[in-house]
Image (tube, rainbow, N blue to C red; front, top):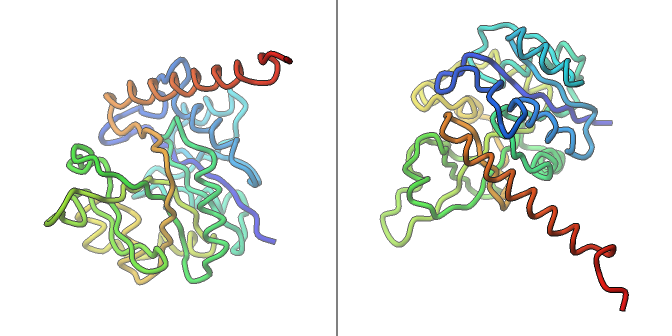
Amino acid sequence: MTAVFAVIPSRFQSTRFPGKPLADISGKPMIRRVYERALAVEGLEGVWVATDCPEIYRLVLDFGGKAVMTKRDHPSGTDRIAEAARTLGVTDRDIVLNIQGDQPVLNPAHPRLLYRALLKDEDCVASTLAIPSDDPESAANPNHVKVVFGLGRRAVYFSRSVIPFPRQGPLSWYRHIGIYAYRAWFLYLFPALPRLPLEEAESLEQLRILENGYRMKVVLAEGLSPEVDVPEDIALAEQALAEESLAGKAARKGGPDDTDPG
């Protein structure tokens, strides 16, 4: 039987935002926010943080989470979770979710969509998420990765540039959301695959899969969960959390206990 594990890669030395996992998001470190969201994903064997930072490791254990120490020299988060999965004893037939550590407002339904899609499509070694968008400002932002896909929603390319180019008509594109599901046997193979020119040029680890001839499933979803790429993004994440809290309170007020029994 296939088991599903979630691993959150987390390193202190982020290029664009050093110390990002420890950044305060509405009173909690970001890594804790992400971890608690991941716990709400249905059908998991468990959730672990994979980190090279003793401070992050201790923090996760202190709030009751699970963590695995990894080497420092991994070129990508996927390389890091591959080491963590081996440490955890994940078997080749299992599936490993890569939940990025910069998504404190993660929708727990999205990772479940990914691993269920991968279970159904045996020709793909991985799956990832995309959100439809027509926002020209976001399209111009290199931190917002774009994806194009073909028949069967197989990924064709990922880029920090606008793809496809909007030569005619209004801009319409798909924004890539950096969470993945991997077949564990492929995850173990991934670190040995060569880093080819497209991955190097775009600095996008998922291109290693396509450049080396493997197939990736793109799963479409609605509802953007703000990612924290740079310090300025914290305000957007906190705003989303506040709006979510207000919506929850409104829903509870409208529940059976607050209605007129008539």
